[in-house]
Length: 458
Image 1 (cartoon, rainbow, N blue to C red):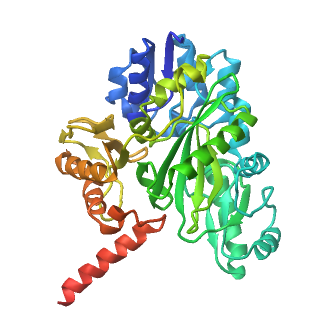
Image 2 (image 1 turned 60 degrees about the vertical axis):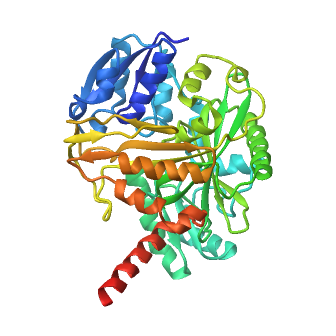
Image 3 (image 1 turned 90 degrees about the horizontal axis):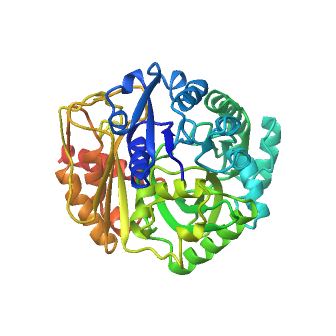
């Protein structure tokens, strides 16, 4: 087992990794920007080093600074968390060359799966269902238009080198394609240093389903079931749950076995997430693989009882998968996660500032992952996520009830947060009944606007 691990990240995921390390008796090193000097992960780590100014590119994305910190503190391994350098094959390669274990998949796998077009090709070869689309990145708008006409509109253009909605354009008419193609390529180049885009059939009103995967260094892979991630705003997830209300045990077991065979075929190791779109016929189509831990991993931990971050450390140290996963995995109860972002609950405008008072909920089935505390200044330079509220119950009804109770007990003063937004969603009949897809929030907002207009007219 590792003696010392550097966490190349910040916020709640850095605190989460520190907790897992402490459980295993591993010493930890935190790195931080000048803006995060008073952050909780700095306080909890055994050692901490400042690696640069506030902007991410000068600190958390500064590979030489991170590697220098690792060498100065003589660590055995680096955990990248999610975001920042987590899926950066170049960084993983530098770690390997420096004799430092990168806690994640192998460099070749990250590089292969980081290219969405290549991931589609590998998925098809492994027998996973994928949407009709381009085999390789598209070079010209004319090439894209020809393929789109063969597939049939609508189609979607996606950046081959990234996600999060950047470099993505929905094309509904042939006349729109040339301009949207150039927009997608430009945004992809700015966001991911690669202008490569690919094209696939666009599903109207899909559900977003993802499956958690763990693999060891001995060729074994286990799929731990799915998460429902359909409630999104601009392709950014806000609420997740496990298991999905739309997946039955037969479908779950069948897909888990297919995923295990597929990723054993490519030699996948450590944690990963296979993402799918589900159409209105409940058919699943592979779209990409995230070769890292996910923000929403706590809900899978809640329904499986498996500590995923601790598992990452064990697997990276060479432990066999059988020491972590034994027997058939079936979800135990239901779990929901609400992302508590520092944003205005009506406009979603980010809200930096000092938290003047903070009270966290508790009670049966409740977990809060956060790096925030009373008196902490939420910096404006990074992602707006300040906490994750997780509710676990015997079934979905109890999980929703516990989430409603916890949201009502949670307090963060001094900044705007999405707590009121989540309270409204938890009380919405369509959410309670599980009637939603990736366009749910658009309809939810429109219903609220119509209701407000109706009251004004009356």
